[in-house]
Image (tube, rainbow, N blue to C red):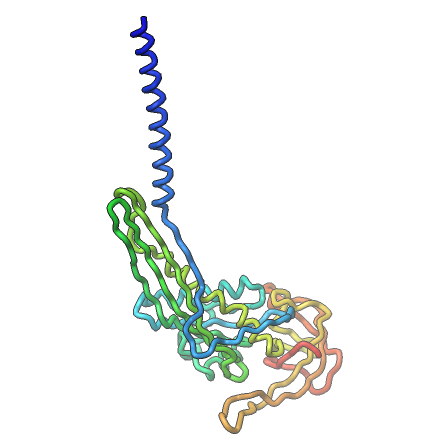
Length: 330
């Protein structure tokens, strides 16, 4: 009888031991899975530069600025035919998300440049920027280049664990060009880094080749920091829009509800004449202007959100015509 009881105790002891072992094994797999899961980090870095661009604070809350972004050059030896377009697309997305800009689509910019036989990509110069500004009613154009891009793989290999880390570093340079004067309002350089880390334990874990998402994440980290400073630099200039058409006392403006134009808003309008050039540098510093009069926005027009109708409330000279300039009344 005692032998039977002893046997029962042994069986129970074995069952409890197996349960504990299962928990230990299960816990081990959970820890192993957590250790081997891929991890990713993205961060902005200040690019090396002789002088850091001054970052300005602006309280401007008026209408949105109308700007264009030209496809960036890729000056690095990596990702030909891909990085430049990706960089300009990311900047366009970030500018639109900020809610401070009306951004002309890159395809429309390229089409106009082809039709006018203008320079393409980041090689746009001041003269070309002025021409594009007049044709498309832009206040400024952003040009840029992916100046550096590199990917490296780092890793360690121990007896029971292995780890591999891919690191993408990118530097992007941009210039903001005033389309009225052709002058560079801002030049800036941004640097971003993205890391992807993979681990394995006893040969088990995440394995794979190059992580292509690193390119976009590193680019976005380098570009996102430009948006606030572009807005602040542009806000040093008076906001303006163009007269698209005129009939009697009615003016049709190329800014509407999407730009933040509100009914009842008052504007001063001007004929723009000959260029005024700096006698030393020969750069355009302005235009001769003839005051047309004051207008008040009455209603919106069109279906695209970029059209409003204003009526002359005080006329000082002849009627308005297409390509005249209107600014917020002081």
